[in-house]
Amino acid sequence: MFARLLLALVLAASAWPATAAGPLEVTTRILVERRVAARDGTTQIRTVPATRAVPGDRLTVVLAYRNTGARPIDNLVLANPVPRQIAYRGPAEGSPLPELSVDGRQFGALESLRVALASAGSRAAGPDDVTAVRWRLNGPVAAGASGTLSFRGVLK
Amino acid sequence: MSQSVIAARGVRPRRIAYQIVMVAALLLANAWGTPACAAGVPAGRNITNVASLRYDIDGAQQTVASNAVTLAVAERLDLTLERVGSGPVTIASGATAVPLVLTNTGNGSEAFLIDAVLAAGDSRVRLVAIDADGDGRFDPALDGALTDGRTPLLAPGASLRLLAVFDTPATATAGSLTLAARAITASGQPGTTAAGQGDDGSDAVVGPTGAAASVTVPLVTATAGPTLVKSQRVVAPDGSASAVRGAIITYTLVAAFPGETATAAITDPIPAGTAYAPGSLTLDGTAMTDVADGDAGEVAADEVTVALGTVAGPATHTIRFNVIIQ
Image (cartoon, rainbow over all chains, first blue to last red):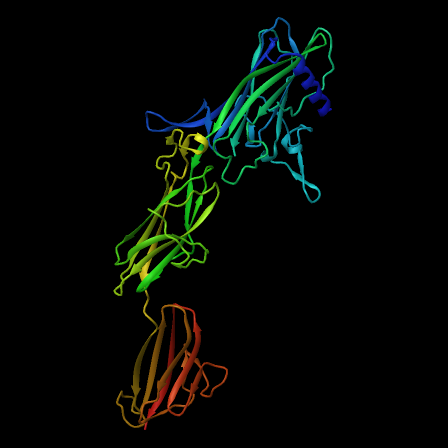
């Protein structure tokens, strides 16, 4: 299934330029949490777009989508690999809860996932084990509608 | 580098409605295949995120890529400086070496500046050396001094064993030794940035430790050796304290051991003109036999011996015995 999809994507990518205009736009951003000294002497935490981060920084990966076409879009699925340099920490505030995977194949709630051990058996998965997140939108995306999906992580 | 696809959901195309599978591909330029070390993702790497979108229109498949967003991994400057061992260091005349371990906890290669300062006391810092064999002892033939207090470049997560060596004159007095280490690139307020000064031209950012650490070691002079204080009490047959024939002299010996002492033994001669009162020897209030046997005490013709063996200091032991004035 995975291999077939990958093949299909490769074929698709070679057949249609990636810049082809379509009714669904997606924009990705990486935000970094910064501590900013406020005028009253307190420290505020702001999540700002950044081009630089250091290990330990808290990141938010944002995917914003918009249906720019005239017809509704159904069955929208977004799957996002979590870079191995980023430890997954959870959905960002206001974002729907994603389904998680520790192997890129089986998705579900973190509590339902297990990590195979080298020796034998398996153990319960933790946030550090997450390798991919996925959102499946329930309803159609109406013409002109938009939304954002995001998750938090820490740069290892 | 090709875009990688991690997961998608199989949806059979239908007419009219768009069937869309959106696949976000997070691309890590130059980063895949390099395991992150304990100190974090190495500085100078880039994380590029490109989301791609796939959908069908009336059975025809199209893809659209999002913008590419790149996050550069800057160099975080951090370190730890820890002493090997704990507690005050006892100084004596001559050279003393204090072993330390400096660890680069940042994510880039970094050199550090070490400063050793003595507060009070008469000792003088001689040098800070690299403990080449890690034995905690200064060997001038082996352990090279830092040049201008600078360490070599340490890889992320790497540790360096150091020795702070100072000399103490014969008239040593107590004081303290403070060792301070800081990253050469930058240190101070966390978040301070040295643009372009990190590995591979990345920015260097002062981490939570302030890219500085210090250790203060109390220095004490060699403690005095064991002490023995002897006292006596005389009780004459008439109840007075007169040292007359037949009077009993009770000797009390209090031995104080400030530190661990090996093969400690106390010997006290029986004074001329007196005779030992058999069975009167006690150690810390416990009676001991007069013959050489399992207990620590032994009384010979002319002296009392109590062999304490190894005494874990600090400790105090009290020995009592009686003699009778002849």
